Image (cartoon, rainbow, N blue to C red; front, side):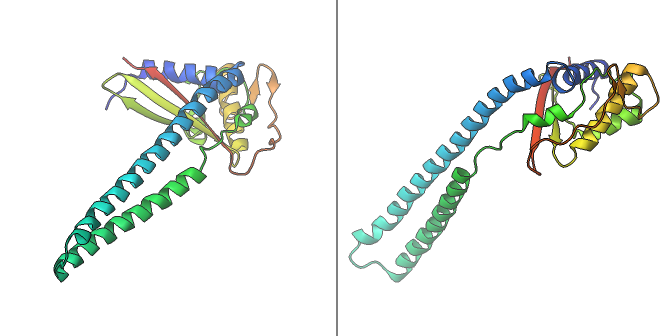
Length: 219
């Protein structure tokens, strides 16, 4: 599938400069997280409700399967065996659904860590001016994922910052910002504010994650 390069670069340029490295990124992120928290909560509640409905349906099915045995005075052995096999299968499905419901109820939606965004440098980046190796390194360590919907002409993308490699992500971002703003060789860690030192990690757990999504049109 061929995607037009110009709108793709323009969309990524806007995404990085507004949401990831822009001066007002933290405020924009807080607004985004409010919407995402509501969506994740609704998805979680919907999953719980679907499992509750499934469990109730299985309970009714088991009762219907066992009803014929109570209504017959002298059911045959084959008939009873068939009923027991069906009831056992429904009971197994019911137990599995109940276990799944317990797991879903105990697993709250994952908490994002907006503090991780503060550990990346701020500045302007132009993907069209960043040397290829520096840009590829940045996109790789930020774990950029893109999905294009050709029917509606829309690109969905996201980057993920993690506490395990946030230092590496900072260095790759600083190199890209420096290369874009100064036109220097790959790897220069400089911005209009001077050389950016890697910030000390904040009080985040070892498995902290922050995924920032975006979408833009590609006609």
